[in-house]
Image 1 (cartoon, rainbow, N blue to C red):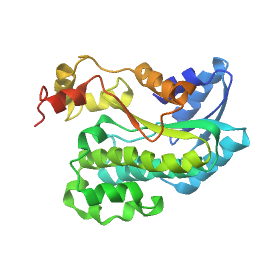
Image 2 (cartoon, rainbow, N blue to C red):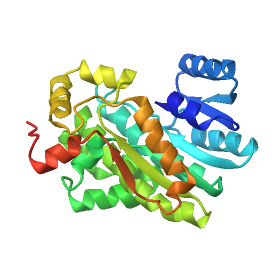
Image 3 (tube, rainbow, N blue to C red):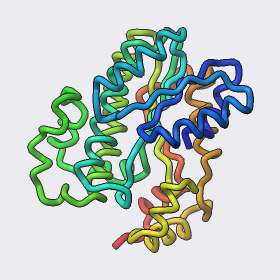
Image 4 (cartoon, rainbow, N blue to C red):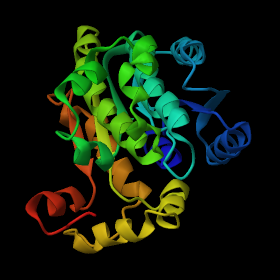
Length: 264
């Protein structure tokens, strides 16, 4: 997904790519360079604020930071609950903080959240949602809510982290706005990526297929679908849009809310 977005947004710009996996990062950077893109790459651990600070500094050193796209994340089949909270919850908060400090006036950012966050909206206690929105980033992993056994489940951790992404973007829009920049999130549905295929082949695969069958589009999404949504939010056509979430799920959440889809 990140590489598709880079290919769409990258022509005529300097791309700064980051990934935790050095092999995957080198492969993506080399492929883009072979196609004529100007690319710099850096190994980064998004769960480590210092690592994100270094990445933001690298980006700023190459020129005005005009577009920031955060696609890093772990799914329930890939990692246990604590790792998901570190990467999907704290990692996003760190990126919003650190790139919010260097983004250029007129710049824009997009965080990839998930329809899981949209589905979870309203299902968490108000005090939890409030804490997710307002707790300083360095303290998010110390919230007392994580002692609840429900959040030892990777799926629950994923849902709460993705809901937090949407809430953190709302709050970050104020700080980003003070620099003359915008920040939004995109919440994909079931997308044909390696992560999406893992989920389809995992324990929740049958439920995901039921979601697709009940949706208005009745198909899997593609990385191109997400890249198009991101391109719009980064463009001048979205200059009056900030602090919001764009749900790109083919109608799955709509089917759930109108009763066409029943989840067990």
